[in-house]
Image (cartoon, rainbow, N blue to C red):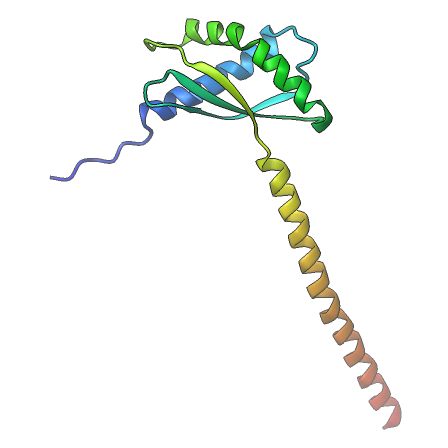
Length: 141
């Protein structure tokens, strides 16, 4: 008999819970003015739950380094807050990593829009030229 496929692994559930708790702790509990509009985009935990990579983005890209420093200095406070909520033996050490996937996505989208715009323009020019040719043929007849 085949095993039924499980939905999410325990590590996935813990990652999601850490992500939710960190977002809440940063929003409500962190009083550091260097931390502005931070969004926690993902969390990856190791198999033994001893470490967690926390991926984040900021609204103002110029404050990226300042935010990184602030998050690293608040790592102990945030880890303590997560430890109170999580029901696991070891609370993971937090490692903050800037997530540039959104910026890359916007860049790729712009490139695609540029290519589509350049492809559509010659087609539009060709259609206009064909219309002008038809108008000239109609005038001659």
